Length: 198
Image (cartoon, rainbow, N blue to C red):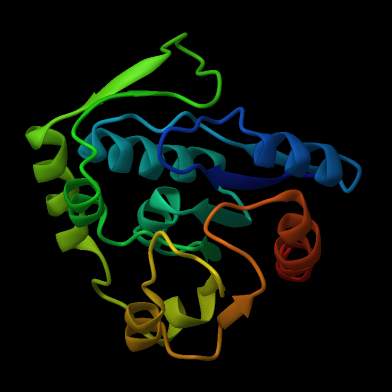
């Protein structure tokens, strides 16, 4: 029996595993026999890391794609080929500086039916703990596995230098786009790389 290939997608802040990006990836890759696994990421950063590590272990994806906050989590999933799109490596700082404490609405439907969530100081502290885990035990094998995609016009976060410092320039890619993925960038930048890697 032929083994099914799986890609794991890790969404960004306020999103879910039912985002437009996930739907488009599923529709395009389904024809190639690739299934997209996209869990809803828990609001608690420590719970998120635990869930994503368990999901990756169980599903054994051939590739993991993370965007923004999801790309920060994806960096931690060692041993798998990974694409980090506009990674937000310092969520604690971003949320504090942009005044994002308090209630937020999810932008996409969540499996548990939740429509809103709260960011408090405990959440910020958990993000800070997760950030301390980043870029640990990176060797040449890990550098081969990780690609960084950065929008030239990303006005939300810019951690290009930090990515290059840890992973080098070999898999560093600048694209014509902003922070959030749109259909055009997905089709012209992300999907060609996905198809090349799988």
